[in-house]
Image 1 (cartoon, helix red, strand yellow):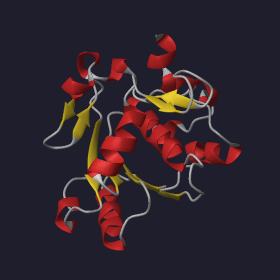
Image 2 (tube, rainbow, N blue to C red; image 1 turned 180 degrees about the vertical axis):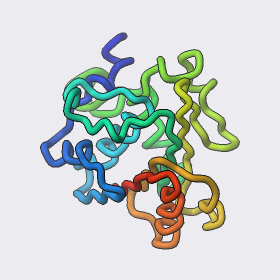
Image 3 (cartoon, rainbow, N blue to C red; image 1 turned 180 degrees about the horizontal axis):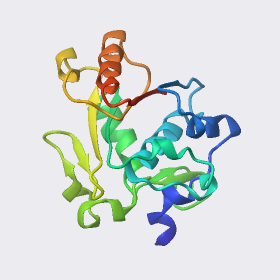
Length: 191
């Protein structure tokens, strides 16, 4: 249904503090908070706005236009590909997946943030490259998925407009990610 497929456009920040993440144009953004405080979701939404160019209705006219420069290359780094990416973060991006408690579509959760219109032929499977752990969107933006248990040298390639580190990384990986943003004036976000 349209509600399910347009979750990014219909997004509402959980608090005025989380809204600040969307307004920030800082090159580095660090967010702290307790478990279940929506750090990851807020950062994922910010990443999806920049990947897709879709600005949520609640941010129209006030979202910094300087952050919308399509297409972009983004990287998402998490603790584990199996336990964090596969089990927790990927479903938060897949438009048909319900993330929350209670009945799907209820008030305590959301559908995945990336709408089908941004996927090749509307399908995750056609946009996702498992070998390279990369999601390619129809607008030319791409998202690379990595984990903290990979070798440091794996982080040294490429340049990225946005890197999101979920659950603070080891210092050497953080430093390497920061280097990947410099040549394109990119941003690094840590949840």
